[in-house]
Image (cartoon, rainbow, N blue to C red; front, side):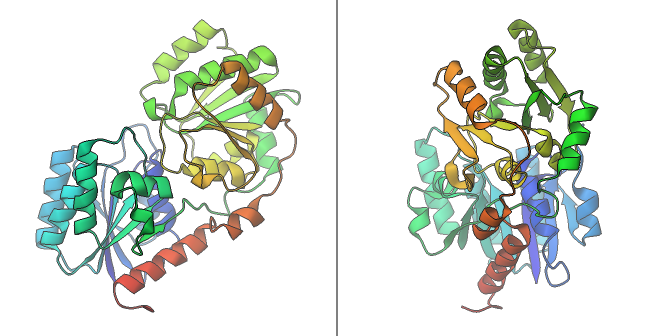
Amino acid sequence: MRILMIGHHLGVQSGVQRYVQNLLLNMDTGKYRVDLFAEPCPPGQQSTAPALRQAGVNLIESPADKKGKILALARHLRQDHDYAIIHYHTASKLGALVCVMIRALCPRAKLIVHSHIVYPPMTLTWRIAHGVYQLSAHYFLGCGVAAGRFVFGDHIDRKPNFAVACNAVDRNRFFVDDAARAQVRRSYGIGQNDRLAGFVGRLNHQKNPLFLLRVFAAMAQQDPAWKLLLVGGGEMEPEMRRLTGELGVEDRVIFAGVQSEVPAFMNAFDLFLLPSNFEGSPVTLVEAQACGVPCLASTNVPDDGSVTDLVHFLPLDAPLTQWAETACRIAPGGPHADCWPVLAAAGYELKIAASRMEQLYDRLAGEGNP
């Protein structure tokens, strides 16, 4: 079966691309011949391309600009439209028109559209896009119900052709690892009596990193044992570095940059902070739980990924002292607990999730059970 996957870019810092990589590396790429249409890896990021190529995925590089990407996709589909399934990862109103183009150029392919984001406010143009999506696609997926409703319509989850495709993680990579915890903490000078808060992701507006620093400063004021380790990079890093000086915490904040061994860093944390302005259903929240790490997130993060009792939420307008008190209360430090029985039962084990996606492809293509 031939499948065209339309992603964003090949950088590992993209949550969508990490999902795509996780999915494709756990699918049967002998049975499913996958072409991945995506932008090249941005500078300064690790690329997912080598692992995908090794797994047998054919990469089709697209231009980085929106217009160029759409035109390149149209050219490709005019030349090669013999696909059984087209799986389109989308988070924009423009994506609805792309779906119309895909259906016109590949009328025999079954089109799956997959939402990964909630980005308020809802507008009239979004409402129009909902109708176009629903008229043009065969099946709808969301990383959570909220993400599905935002991109495809308020009641999409009531339709039989919608499902949640949760951001599952690899049980063989993300698990409680005391040795990795000790190694990372030692490498960054984190002492036995220190408490380590952490963040993994892109340092951009979506993740609200300036507020994160203010929360951390309040935490450090309550307990001087706190330190903060930031894994990732992004356009707001210079502004963040300036703010650490203004808040007087520059000696407590570590900018670790982009890292490939995310599980080791997750294990090193005593607390995972995610005070985002908006999200879909962040895979990092699941990764943290898989490593047994208490999590404190904003209520702007949908609760789909709150699978265990490790996750706590606060509104962004709550006082910083409340954020600090909650952080200190839920993250006592010490060994992490294994939460995989709960995560696996909820469907967050990667191989199970990949198998379910294969079953969906088979059903839509008429090769599986009705």
